[in-house]
Length: 378
Figure 1 (cartoon, rainbow, N blue to C red):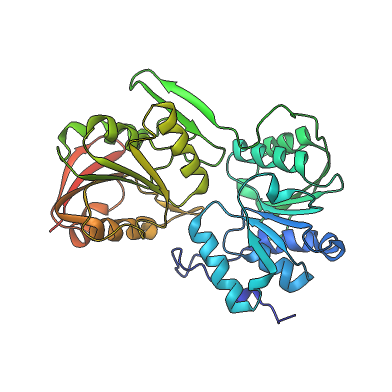
Figure 2 (figure 1 turned 180 degrees about the vertical axis):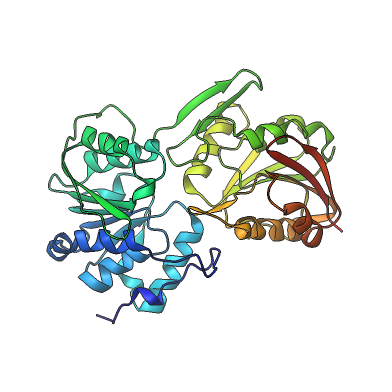
């Protein structure tokens, strides 16, 4: 077994900065709590959910000898970071990336996971594990204490008869769940969509557990929607960059019926949600939904209109670089004279950044919280 050190792990191709790390105290605590279970697990009996950059997967392999680990990561950048870190540490053969379905946890006796931010996402994961993992499965779900809530305990005890809460260490804690209640919600589809119809815009919105804003209309997105009549009238290609549940893509497809519309996001749950949003609104033949790291798969100078409601967090941290990769790719993909319409928190200095990266940028709308800009490709 190669020597393994957490110091070898990097976040790349995700944002890297001195205050952003590829591993944190919760990763270490999860692995320490699960040490005995990992040592006893046979090949193929360990599953990992929500690993950010590979710390859980590669720690289980490099420190505890786990093999044939099954891994599911929502973010495409996380998958790519794990692959690079696995190559760097000599552990590329220790795991396999899997979709979020029964094959991920079938027969698993140990599940390691970073607790998701939403209860809906935790419910989805807990139900999947309880229904399809081995009856002896033990789930080690950890996170930073500031992000945990007693409601997470309630979700887990709905699906597991036993729940132990670890001692705190370095502001982290692990919830250890066992004895699955396989029949508790046997009728539910663990990857099922929630749906909601919004009368004001006459739009169905679908969302899986981890999709940003769920079935609601994010208030920034709602503000940007009001500017659609002012956007490029006849783009050959329009792109919803970082599409989430696909609201912007659906609305631009309805407003520009002659355009080819692409909805792009690196999140697997966002892509699944956007596809269902299109289907519910009869737009699945009009809108192509793709999983992509920014717009890496799109050719240069190929779009006349891009819409973007960029993130302003990297994990739990507010970080200006969260949107820079999106802006750079938008600039590359826009054709000359093409428009990038962006909505962002007014406290951010994105307008100046957009002028440097894309081209002339006008503030076309502003309210108490959000700013909408139009940038024209030089």
